[in-house]
Image (tube, rainbow, N blue to C red; front, side, top):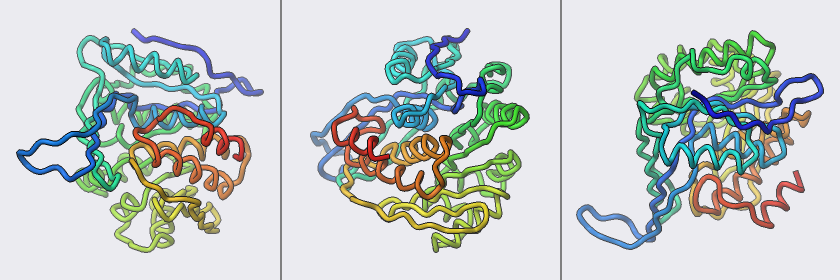
Length: 324
């Protein structure tokens, strides 16, 4: 059975502006002010926070003003109830398949003294989404569908994610894709990763620098963007460059470099998901790709200065959103 929380307004054409399909989990954030030593002990900060690459992107698109729906799977447990409540609080229309067979996914996130994060992802209910569990009418109502590669590294849920993409494209939607993790791409193998994703007709792809380098073998950002565009024909590439901002390669080959405004790294968790959600919130409402990327860089810069992927909105973020 699924829990449905309505909330995403339909556009003038009677369609949902954005539907995100994928993982919703709960993060266990562990942050220390010194490097961990094997067998040692230290004080730090430990907290629970909502997460999941797909759910993060959905929340950030909604925070940035775009009506957004989310499709995913959680356990019938406390963390599943927390996911459900969190998405409702964020104003995201959530279709959550609930299961007794698997626990809600959890991720351990270690944040080092330089703000860089390492993750260990447990395989929970989010990894067990099956094609027959997809809400066909909701997916086919989308004007745009966003997917995270965390749904592509194993099957299930790969077949369900691919089916969602195929249903959406057949119904006339556009599609975006976040490659997710350079380590997981390398573990699966580049050829296998592209075989699972490059035939879907992706319209926008959001690699970060490390993912782009793993996919293409190139070091130069422009060369990476050109090679990714060749791997996903007809795609718009929004390459996330961390402290260097972003680079946008449009379908016609035009390139725009988007410099950062600040770089005060506290925790990089979820910054790429925020970039994708913020970009889509503008691009899907008619902004050109360069302007959408400028806005997304500002939002993700705010995210890296907080702890966790979805820190509470403050006055500074409201100012960023207002500028967008």
